[in-house]
Image 1: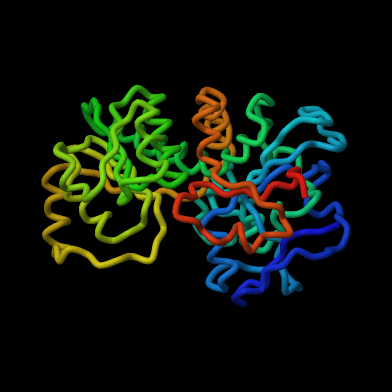
Image 2: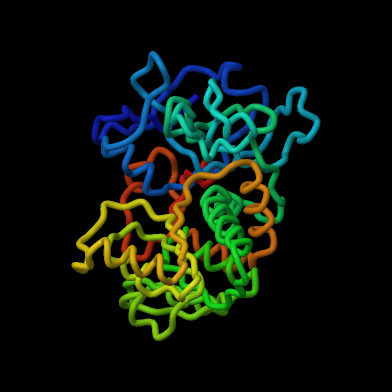
Amino acid sequence: MKAVTVKPGVADSVRYEDVPDLDASTGSILVDAVAVGICGTDVEITTGTYGWAPPGRERLILGHESLGRVVDPGADRSVQAGDLIVGIVRRPDPVPCPNCAVGEWDMCRNGQYTERGIKEIDGFMSERWQIEPGYFTKMDPSLGHLAVLLEPTTVVAKAWELVGAMRGRGFWEPHQVLVTGAGPIGLLAAMIGVQHGFEVHVLDRVTEGPKPQLVRDLGATYHSGAATDVGFAPDIIIECTGVGSVIIDSIQSVEAGGVVCLTGVGSGGKASGVKPADMAKEVVLQNNVLVGSVNANRRHFYRGAEALAAADKDWLGRLITRHVRPENIGDALKRGPDDIKVIVDFEAGA
């Protein structure tokens, strides 16, 4: 069997190679790989700045944004051969911490969780993979390859859940939403915002290419520039860039009583010179909420699958800008100027 592997901590160590046959340690359900999405975490792992190999091994099978077709369900009666499924990425820690003990492993408190394709468990970028019952989501077959978008959708499904939880702190009827960043996470966040009935605006730095039209075709409004210049104070900001200056602008721009949800993980960028204490004072005086969101649990995979099934399939298809064969993994990891989501396609013609 062939797989895309990497040596975590070593730059440019990615390769498509023969690996040992599967064993039962990763699950009893046998799956043929259909596609795997590429994201910034994969790039970080292949550049040697992130990732952990399984214990006792030097190399990790890459890939956490999965899509596969069941070959043999084993004893699991919830799926059958031919079903499209997406694997859940994180596994609870073995202690477990209080959150992992109740299935909220995305909120793990001791950091001993593991993650497929990232942290100590092989990922999904192999010709075949296995998975345990209860750690996958069955997908609407009409989605086809588009179901590979589920994992990034779970990230923003959780973000929207956290934002919704803020309604319980007082009378709050949000209407206007600003999403910062028009990459896959930002566009999927905007899609869910539109599905929820909000007036959605998306901010990104580009003025050309596919992103502005994708936003408009959602029924949302596209902006370029700074969050402080959009001309209104959003009730909700979903921040998807991880850029320091954008984060600060978002905190300064949100409406009184509003929520800023941070989903972007980046390297920072220069801030605008605002003093932290002054910014904190504004947050306090306006009763604003600043919340971070990362990863997802089983509930968010279910909600993400519902959101994708309800979405316009032609619009979703435009998010996938390139299909790359696994033997050309180097090309998949190089981001082009118009790329949104690149996928490694195990079913594409050679």
